Image (cartoon, rainbow, N blue to C red):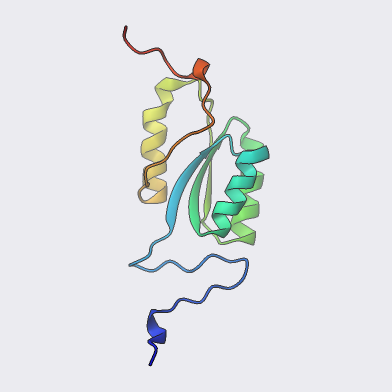
Length: 122
């Protein structure tokens, strides 16, 4: 005898609905306005992530967010125009993202360049 109450049905092309025991996963994509970043955003949104999308081009971010929020699920993508060289803005931006996404799982940014990482002491 199977327990159908614990089975969630996924519609093809749509993420599995979030539940209190399995909330939507959350993530940040830096450089999300086009190319690989935009492709990753589309894939993760379809997999059920709520995303903070960062890039310098606000217009492109807004177009991508509108696409994801209408074609995947409303509220799955948030746009944040930001230039990564403006280090002083990062703490406030990160606080805003965490508040907007209601939390954040650990993340990695594989797209950094050595020239963008500030030199440490020594």
